[in-house]
Image 1 (cartoon, rainbow, N blue to C red):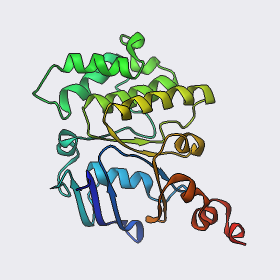
Image 2 (image 1 turned 90 degrees about the horizontal axis):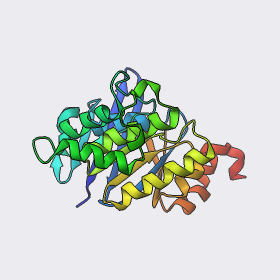
Image 3 (image 1 turned 60 degrees about the vertical axis):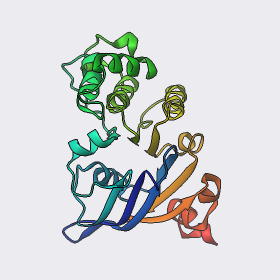
Image 4 (image 1 turned 90 degrees about the vertical axis):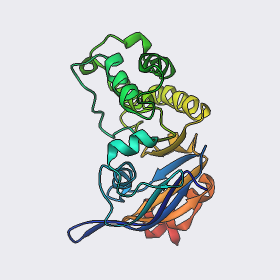
Length: 241
């Protein structure tokens, strides 16, 4: 049984279809990359998985449980957490306080020690030296790390990362990749949307490509990138000649 199963998922805004009969399964322990041009429906897919948006049709199952109609907070407590493409920290709160929010209201809610969890996540994501800095004063890399840390503090089984490497320098990207590898090694299943393709290819075990709300191809990263379908999406029809 897959950790996450999407069956014939459908979402539209008026006449615009943004998720078109999409079916997908993510196994526990995987690190899956998601590629696709702007407007392909990638972030909408994350909204549907986390409950930020409700699907118009289809089914979402997490760990064998139908979560299609659960709201975002219930799915977070079930073990699904995400980062956002544009970081949304509580700017007037410290790094530690931001991470503590995730530790207090996530899957471990009512169990364990949220303060300890927040500290452990700060160390894992390299934010411990910035613990008492207000989030509004962080650099872009630090805000990206905080976004990831706050999601991780919720103790997810499935972590969704949305363009976490966007805007970073090569050196910052390498540092971030090391942290993502460490999170994955700790047992967290990761699905990562990213436009920084070389970063994704350096770490993903499996690659999914979307276009116009549909799943175009799903498979081993090198084979996916070499496929005519992906060449056409990224380089135009001439790539098929």
